Amino acid sequence: MGDRDAFGAHVVLADFVRPLFEPVGFEAERMAAVGASWSQHECRTEDQVLEVARDATVVVVQSVRPLLTRAVIAQLDSCRCLIRAGAGYDSIDVDAATERGIMVCNTPNYCVDEVADHAIALLLDCVRHVSRLDRALHQRIPAESIPGRSRRIRGATLGIIGLGPIGRRVVQSVSGWDLRVLAYDPYLSQEQADSVGVKLVSLEELLGQSDFISIHCPLTRQTHHLLNHETLAFVKPGCVLVNDSRGPVIDEGALIAALEDGRLWAAGLDVTEEEPLPEDSPLRSLDNVVLTPHVAAYSPESRIDLYEEICAVCADVIQGRIPRPLVNRAGLDHLR
Image (cartoon, rainbow, N blue to C red):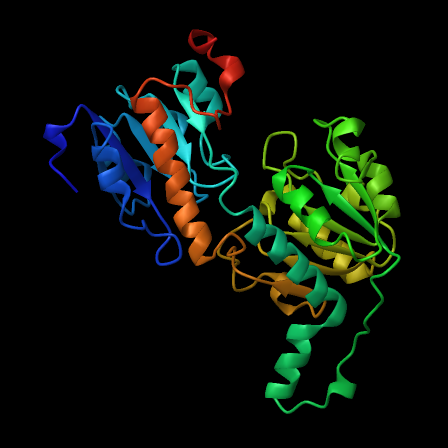
């Protein structure tokens, strides 16, 4: 990191996840090339963010903890852009940023392959019990004594909630599986869905007809608890549910109830409402749940891609261009 006083703009990475997504090492050089400094920190509180980012031109946050709140944003007097290092941007108060004329961007393309692959892995594990059988063998438990059964995937119906880049990649990846694919996405037209061979349906139709459901929508006010006691009542009995988007898209109490009473046959979860998952969570004791600790986005390649995207957005902001992954464009009159 260079001397910040030597540059006219400051980019602050306020927090990052070590070791999976720590900076690659080229960030300071990339920023220096466009006349900006780079500093990186591991803040865990709002006060810590303000201590390092109060005079920043661009502030980047990586974890999903709510660090860029309205109270913090109100004190970022020099800030022109807030960046979420990830596809979801629910850890940023977008309304507060928009009111102050601050751009909000995400990095939606860096982990499409990884998250799609992970969703498929969770689905296969739920159906074929790979991790349970592995644990049984390691514990010298006879496989025939393990409860549960597998099922055939070919000919089933897959429902995709959120047909963005990751949802579309899942569809492409399973194209040879002989599946019927449905999607719920109120922001897409049937013409757009036709381009990847998917039929758009209502949420109730998707829940009622799908044997497998994979969630790939962002967490917003509209999608918070999208799946709850009321909507999960529509699920086809024996459905398998996979979520590696955001935990609060599902009401966890409703999810547990549906798993316990058999409406859901199994669930594969990379995300939960509270992270890390509490030790006393019922999800830990359910045999029909496969859990991973919010790592779907990770690979060595995606880590490099992430910081490439961050640097590209920062360069656009510093050099006066409107970044492509701008999520609050409609609310910023001065950018029109």
